[in-house]
Length: 237
Image (cartoon, rainbow, N blue to C red; front, side, top):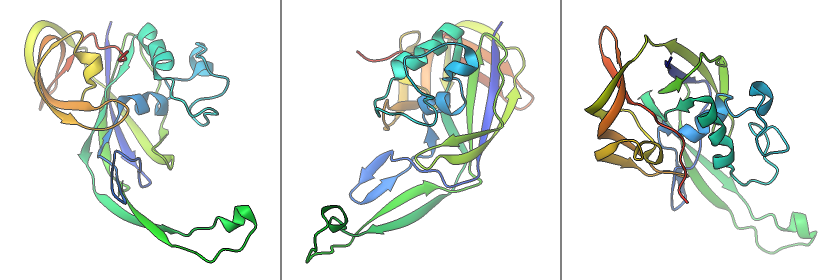
């Protein structure tokens, strides 16, 4: 049996991560990558699920080596039949933060310096009360946290989960999916005909995707949700 959950994430702090750098401006795109959501929602948690990933610490809060291990970690979700889509903005506002720092090398060298050159930068962040939406597809029922942390500043966000009605499995359908998708995860199982690109690390995402293949359909009172079926985490060689 397939379970589909609609998750709405409400920010209670400003959210920052550098989607792009334009000179001294560091901009946060109003979209959440599905890799980040897997960690934030606690699915990559060896103690919670009894599956030891190749790390010697709790990866959600501390990474000693600062080397991503996406393939090792997210492959565990493929084995458990869990897939998280990227999250799109339901509504959001942006705030611009200016930061300044000075050249304080003498604090390290313990020597006087004749220069104290100020510098500055700006960070475009997503403001509190902004909301995002993603979907979790699972072969089993899942627990969800009430609160998670996101972004560089570990910003607090509330998690509201809506279990959707049982989906209908449709074979070889042509649909347009307005939700963001990870192209590596969908192009192996579906024929993708057109899309808009969202440039962001570590893997650029796509949205408004016209594709052909097997899909899950969920009929609601005001809308019908169509999501690609059989999505799994894949990684470029």
